Image: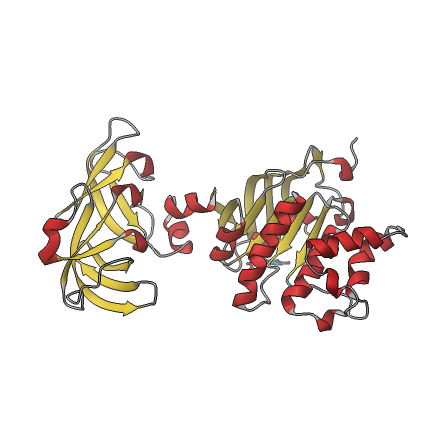
Length: 377
Ligand code: ATP
């Protein structure tokens, strides 16, 4: 049998679940995290992401299923025998030890005497080489978190698990640390599994994101793919603002590369068949979604200037607010009561004020379709 230290760094969960009495925190779940990837478990509080992470770490015993690291089934192994390490939100550094000794701790515990080079390399990796002789309380929150990462990496785990590691930092530091953690992961090349409730954080850092909801993975994919092609209203709303229009398919597509033609009130809309998650047949009810920043706004008097081939709906501006890089409009339309629009790079038009009749238009390629049977909430 291979020892845990020799296994690969891909993580494979098969039918893994966790119940507490009659409550199911994680429903049976299959998930593969490829070796060397930066993987994020994303979801609101209580969705089961920490429980999933803890089952990978061995800190929580699954109610069913198996955990493989590389080729090895580690389901029955205690945490310390698994080639993984965890960084928590509370970095729990040893306050009486300096930074060097905090990082050296894991090596010394294994009886390794000559630690200088390894610790030095690790401190350089997290850019704290100059701070080696300081005590934790002399460092900023972001620096302390970097020490915690160095300490977790010193024993060369195959997989690093990160449980809301940036949760205690202020927003600016959080943003810096996101880039920093991504750089560290790229440099060491091992698998990172990162738990967060912050969609921007998951999108910034991860190669692949699993969006969790109610103990299930609702959708899995690359950040851009999830954002542009959500498959449920939950994912669409969790990863940003979406506008939804209830529509009916007027003409189905013969081939997957074709467009569907839909009707919403008096408006005709086009949806690429490949981006339709609902029933793609004539008469099918679809929720047509479009991200606010993809929408342009034109005063109704200039509607003739809108290029052919764009999806368009008419409405009236209810509210507008200038938010620096763009102006955000709320437009009421008979087909969608509160259409929210972030209009960017729009030429200043003094007529675009509350009460104005406007046309909202966008490239059909930026439209996605969901099964209208789903709840909008
Ligand atoms: P958070 O971001 O708040 O930590 P989470 O998505 O990580 O949320 P989990 O910590 O995985 O959620 O918890 C999932 C659900 O399981 C929650 O409803 C939680 O209350 C419940 N739960 C977790 N641990 C236990 C336990 N030991 N006993 C009973 N219920 C638990």
